[in-house]
Structure formats: structure tokens, C-alpha cells
Image (tube, rainbow, N blue to C red; front, side):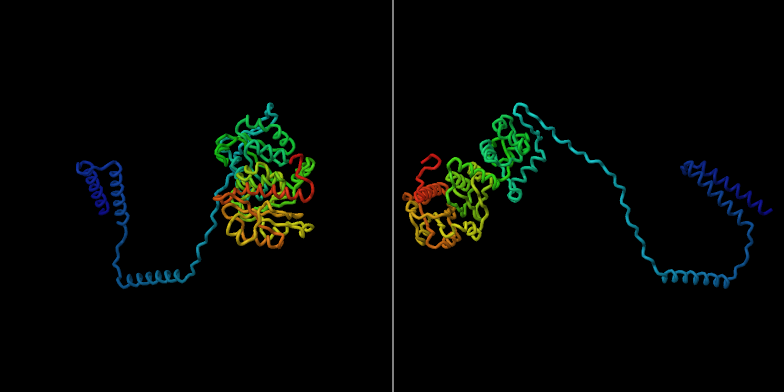
Length: 425
């Protein structure tokens, strides 16, 4: 009975509470909050009704303390056991790489080959700043790569024609205007058929970027350096024309200006000399400026470059080593006083092999050149060219021209062949 009375009193209290909350203006409860209050009230009621049937017995204080103490001791032992247990290091699994997808690369199709019926040539048109242009010209502009591949780069119609006429192998030709290509179509067409030379039409801007000239001629070609076979062919052609190389080797010492070195090689090819030796410390005879200064002379005469003075002695042929002469061109007054010198016109004794050493205008002849002269003893001479008062020296190429043609005259007089060579005096 008491249970029913308590139940009805609680239900009436809950209804009053809900009614008060809904009617009060001070609480702005939403529908969700009202639902929550009802739920809480129902839970309270259920707990009260659920616990109303339990019997409340007096608690023994000593027994309660003993139970709590045993529980705390058990918990403490469990904690110590967990601390003493060995802790296994965490195992790390290797990270799994995300799946790789093979994305197909897009390859740029090669430019089509243009067959020009008017010029009878085939070429490929390249775009502005095409990577192929940079790849080709970077290789030949680098001295290290150029020497490794034994290649040279030529600019201009005349130099390209000269190289083709001397039998050099043309690898690549670049041009910007069709009318420029038409000037060399015959020689280039022959090279394309025989050696498969490649021809590319490139924008003028690219040629100007890679050209070493202020005004690019519009033609640029990559050639292989002259081979021994090609030089022998040129020599045979000269002999058939009545021109035989003289037993003179020109040794370049401290020549630092490419234009001067090119002019020296041009003069030696015109004489013609047996060979040109470019010692270590001189500029590169295959550099663009030297090639333009040589005007094709590098294609017609053997050139030994980057030679040390120790290696120079091995160049002398054994059969003429006992009849070798060394001449040093010296116009420095101080050195002329310390070494016995003669006027170049007074040269009277020439040998089976003659070395003419000429130095640069700024640095002159090195001491190593004088040591080389001393190897032949009294057969070595210092010669000079007399000049007007106030004139220190001549251009190295001009001085060499005077000395070489005087040596040629003396050689012809000594051999009894006269002055005529190839029909000219």
C-alpha cells in the first residue's frame, strides 16, 4: 500500500514540474531540451521504483574496511606485475608504397623531312630554340668535347666550300635562308649523297645566338677534322700540280691571338711547309677565329697542336737528324744582345730539315725554345728582321712571311732547282 501511495505522489510531482516548465516564460526550452527533461524524470522514477524493493541491512564497519583493504592490495599487486613484465618494442611495419601507375610518355614526333626539288636537297625545319640545335652546337662550342670528337665548326659560304673541296666530312649543316643554301648546293648535295650529311633549317635568331660573328652569314656547319688520308690526298694533288712541300717545320711559341695563329697557318700552307707545330700554351688552332684567319689553311697542312718541348725533339725524322737546322726569329733587343743574331737575309746554311721558331708579339720566344736550339749546337741560329727607327716589331704573321720565303729561296738555290715552283717565280 505504501508503495502505491509513493508512486502516485511522484507521478503528480512530475506532472507539476513538466507543466511549470512548459508554462514558464523565463525558460526558452526547445523541443529537444523538453524531451531530454522528460527522459531524465522517467529515469529517476524507474530507479526509485527499482530500488524500493531492496532490503536495507546494517553495515558492519570492520568487515567493510577489510574488504576494501583486500581489494586495494590486489590492485597494487596487479600494477607491480605489469611493471615487471618485459615490454616488447613496438613492431613497425614497412610503409607500403602507393601503387605506381605507368603514365605513358608523350613523344614529340620528329619533324618531317622536306625534299626541295629546286635545290635537290633534303632538310628538316627546326622550331625556335629547338633542343636539337642546342645539343648540336653545345658539343662543338666546348673545347673539351670538340677535341674528344675531333670536330670543328665553320661559318660562312667560303670556308664551308673550302672544307668540302679538301675532302673534309661534313656532319651537319645549319642554314636560315634558302638563298644562302643555294650558294653551296652543289658541294652540299654531293656530301649529302656520299656521307649522309644532315641539313637543318633553323630560325635566324638561333643562328645569331650561337654565332661568334657580329653579323652571322646564315650558314653554319660541323665537320670532322682533317684526317691523315685527306692530307695525303691533298699532298698528292699538290705534287701533281708541281708543288712540293719544303723541309721546313714552323714552331709556334706563345702565340695567344687566334687570328695571328690562323694567319701563320695560312702562310705555311701557301709556301707550303712540311707541317706546323703548335706548342703547349698557344691558343687553339681549331677555334673559330683561328679557322677564319687560316682561310682553309688548316685543311691543307699537317698540324700538331698542344705539343711540349720535350716531345718536339721526337718529331725530327731520324734519317735527317744529323742535318737539322733550328732558326729562332728574335726582334727583342735585350735577347739579341745576349744571343748571337744574324740578319735574315744573311742566312746561308740550310739543312735537310729546318725548324723555324716564332713567338708572339707580347711574350716573344720562351727560354725553352733556346734550350731546343742548343740541342743542335752550332747549327742553331737567331735571326732578326731589320726595321726602321722607332718601329719595334712587325706583326707575327708578316714577319713569318718574310722569313719563310727567304728560306724557300735559299733552299731552291742550294738544291739547284731555281726559283720557279708550279710555273711561278
